[in-house]
Length: 243
Length: 172
Image (cartoon, rainbow over all chains, first blue to last red; front, side, top):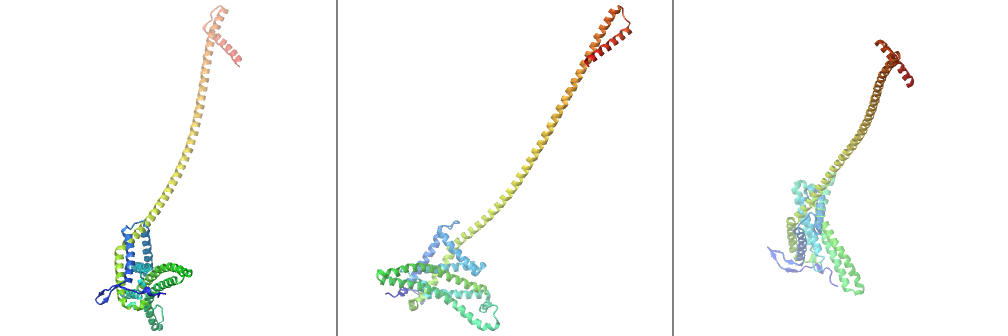
């Protein structure tokens, strides 16, 4: 049986180098571009066909998604600041969703199953929250490390705990998405491997499961994109409102 | 696991994913989100204004209805008064007509009585004249002589009285 992790391997297609940084284009990046192109193309179809007061089907879907994200941003970041962060949060959602969904096509690649990709996003978001926090509250921002109403005696204990919890955020954020995507595709690969290697008499069973898991994976593609963005909202909201 | 073993692709993955995200972010922010969000807001405003307009119209309609009902009530009351007044008026006219008719009848009655009285008197005078002449002639014939004026008058009056008495007794 073929190694079920084999399909996570990347193959460099066009070797490129920019100022000593390797920016070679591989199959994962191509798949990501395809996904993003489809996502942006769908938005352009909505916009170019004329945004109407009485929406068509595609416009309804786009509006539903945007309203959903807008409500989320308004809930966690606040109504007055929501418009500043909405484009970023919405783009993040559609980026992750497009990458997750394009990976469901056989032969394609799920770039969100690479920890380095989810990790760089999580780190960027972490740095962004720090920048927002310091820009908004200055030195007072450090009070985020001291929960309100805590006895003075506990402060030396709480600060390290809070620092760890802060640092755990980008780790959990990146690992959650990476692990979900990797696990789903691994299960699919294992089941397909079983279906291929077993005789037809028993092989239909794992094959049937792949159909169910496929449906589940599509749901997970949406759910993980949602969780990633909602947690980003929560983290940004935390540093804006502190406590 | 290839995700941890293929270290050589990390640079390009990190680079391209961030660049691609930045590009998607800029494109979506510039071209995709504003028109759709605008349409959403426009629709929200339109629905809001239309609902408030409808509410206003409803209120106006209610006020109008109340006004019309009031007017209808007034008209009913007015009509009732008019009918009542007309009834009273017609009664008055009727009574007046009856009274007038009665007065006229009474007038006609008294006129007739008067005429009858006049005719009676005239007749009586005529009868008196005839009787006088007859009496004088008869008396003259009886006495074969003319009477003096005083006797004539006396005799005439006597005869008249006699005739009248007789008529009265007959009439009675």
